[in-house]
Length: 405
Image 1: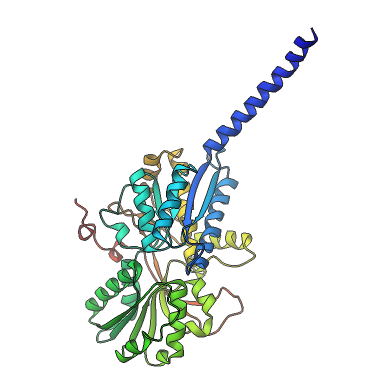
Image 2: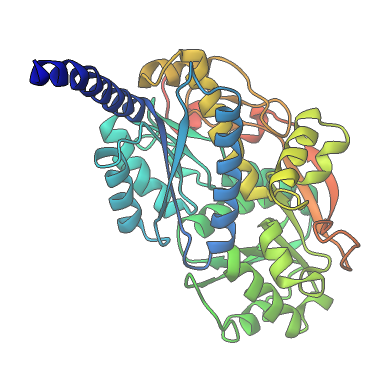
């Protein structure tokens, strides 16, 4: 009798324990997992860390709003070390080992193409958040690849039209990899269209520390505009050394992407008067409601500082992806992809939409100039010169890219 009584007491407990364990497994399986491979180490580390902070904010907002019928999102961050092979390995692990249903990330043209190769083959949605032209072209484009970032053609069109004038002489200092080459190609096209003359290009390796062998060759070209087609630490070091070499007195310094992180690291003196394009600047809050809301949320989570440009696009990529998950009612790939394609979105800077043929986000491009002096607020680093409205006229046509129909 005692054993029967004991069994009757223990059985409900055992059933309860099994139920709890099953619920835990089910809950884990239902987690919406987003992999984020970015180069936390290397010359783009500052930008990558800001992208993580912004992506985390988008996930937190989704979860705080109840997720999807109680299902919460989880961000899985991996360091791709700015290496295409490492990026492919980490992405494959995220999908096959960690169960990521979606991938966002890639902070160089080379790594995002490597990531895209993995996701495309496995029919996993990938939202890229770094500039690349090639990712919009066949065969890299796919129904599962979305490009949240500006691309080099868009950037160079907006910046070049604003800066280049007929008869100007243009020279390039170019990082010798896909990003630099694509920027040079875009600016060369704008120069031809406006009647400016490209007088030369000097290439440098990624991660260069000493530009003393490159700068005299550029100075000898005597350009009106010197364009720095490089990024991150490369951009900061090159612009500083060119300024120290006295070149800023004789020519205008321009860079396709003038990032918040590079400007803060370099300081007002290094970047004084430099003009460039950017994805986002916090002053958009003056006339853009979504920018005001985004700034406030980021400041509340990060001690009062404003979000950065490259960080902001990670926020938008994750936020719009999770909004599509809600619209689709789940994580089924084709339904989420269709939701991303089907409607405009406004995460942080005004209206955007994914163009049908290449799934490039059509959006505004901002033109900024670095302030001459540091302002009272540490994030007040740029003067907003112009906002080029979202328009497909900034993009190469679908026919030019090689899409049929």
